[in-house]
Amino acid sequence: MRKPRVIRMVFALSLGCFVMVIFYFNSSLKPASEAVGESSSRQKSRRSPLQTLYDGDQVESAVQAIHQGRRELLEEACRSYTRKRRVLIPEDLKHIIVDDQHGLLYCYVPKVACTNWKRVLMVLTGVAGSNRDPLAIPANEAHIPGNLRTLSEYSTSQINQRLRSYLKFVFVREPFERLVSAYRNKFTRSYNTAFHKRYGTKIVRQHRPDPQPEALEKGNDVSFEEFVYYLVDPATQREEPFNEHWERVHSLCHPCLIHYDVVGKYETLEQDSRYVLQLAGVEDQVSFPASSKSTRTTGDMAAQFFHNISPFYQKKLYNLYRMDFLLFNYSVPAYLKFR
Image 1 (cartoon, rainbow, N blue to C red):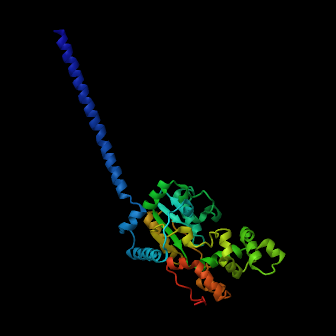
Image 2: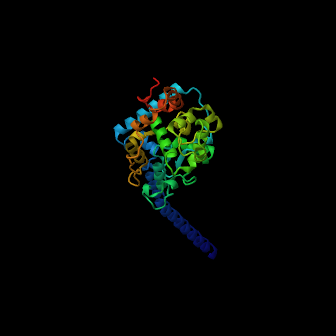
Image 3: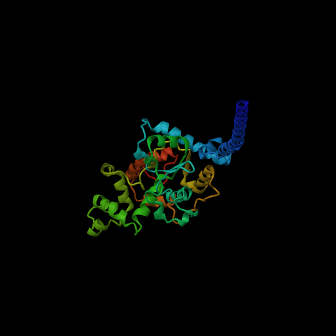
């Protein structure tokens, strides 16, 4: 008789434990599932810049229309003026800066506000630490290699994933205004001794009749005409690629191989920069610095520099930069005399 009673007690104890286990799992799983639901709803509500661009309900419609028009013009120009497509290689991606936190790819073009855009990205990626003011970052720090990652540093699969899902943007400028700006900055400023030595001495040696020994040594008095001769000389690019400050935008950023979602322009810099920051959802975290217009190279200033360039060399130079004019919808400057 004692044996069945023991069996009944063991059975009752086991049943009670089983009920407690079920109760425990029910109580622990319920908040977990609620947490998952909350997490997924938060993820759904946080859209990427690319989704924000193409969903089209977060930004002023007039601004969207302008940028859609630029994309369409670029695509049409690529179809019209480029015949062969090729596969991108890592070398093509060295100018594309990656912001993994906000899903941004920025192709930087020297002399098109790239210093300020690098400063902004240093703030957004945390490279600047607690600093939220881009202008507090010294200009030379913005250009230190390694501060910001470029797309060329990633694996092929990582590159493709980012090209598909990140917002890709580039800022461009009227080609000859950009060229004159590069000349003024690199050849007429006394502090740019590295450029004078690296390029100025070579230009003087190759494109100045009877140069003085001091000019050959320092290279600090290169004229704009000599700079133009250097650019259009076929031997220049046979020896080495153009420096990034006067390299063509289409050679730096490959807009016919990479589909840019936003093509910003220097002429509408503040508006277009604000648009990119709005798409990224960070307009309340960082502001694009206002540029100083007092030293900016303008069309009138460029016209003065081209005044002494013969029509023959104007034509050669235009042919060199022709694709940038066509791809980004810039007219042939009225001051050119070769037409």
